[in-house]
Length: 358
Ligand SMILES: Cc1ncc(COP(=O)(O)O)c(C=O)c1O
Image (tube, rainbow, N blue to C red; front, side):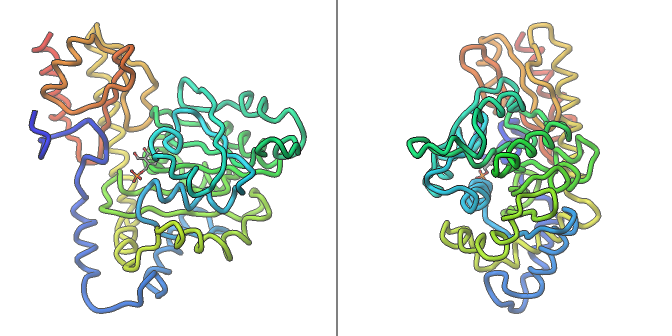
């Protein structure tokens, strides 16, 4: 199979290109001079737009990529002798080469979650004592819970689930982080404003993604410091987070070009338009796959990812024609991702190929 330039790939939403409006926005910004590192009015104006979208009482900064966003988001909230709790399927655990562990210098505690979502009962069971841990200096003290919305398995937490997880962490003096690498897909699917399932649920710190949804390069980290958050957050947002960004090499000198992309991304809800399309394509793909008796959808299709099991031989033959990932080698459960650039005919062609190969 030709892997250099494919007609379409279900491998990842990262395999898609950049939305033409985003490229034009970069080009528009490409004249004249601005002070570097975002220390100028234009970048600050776009950051304020993002903060307003997220309900205010927060501070946003730009970073390069999703792994960097998670590193910068987690670092100020956890000290070396404290730990981060996360589902074992979380990107920070499985796919970031240990970067969050390396930069925070902290222990990460994993919980097995078949649908990618940690339950409140699982979280509570990790806190048999009062406080963020057990105050025994032989043990790392549990300080931060990290959840992803949508999860790495394409599923979504409900508002009530997020609120409950935040309450539990806050009641132990801790914090809750949301990896929102695909946050726009979550918003589109939930039919809610992003602030409703982040800021208003008590999320302390958010990794706000863009690259997987049509941006060329750039993500944001947002710290919330309203009444629903841990009272220490304002101090971290105002005086600490930018040092963590610089030290972890996530401060881009030409910040204005990330700002230009985000300005366009937020304008007329382009971010939602792209995410809605990607989600609709995933729904369409799931419904077309359901026509084929030997293929079984294995996870709820709640965002832009479709998971299903299929016979080994069919899977291997299909892989010669299409790019996608086998998620679980033991069951041949595979993952197909849709993006803003996936077209209905890409899915129809894929289904035709499956029918032919059978
Ligand atoms: C849930 C999630 N978080 C974070 C990332 C990291 O993004 P990046 O590859 O830009 O570092 C990814 C990338 O696939 C992801 O799926």
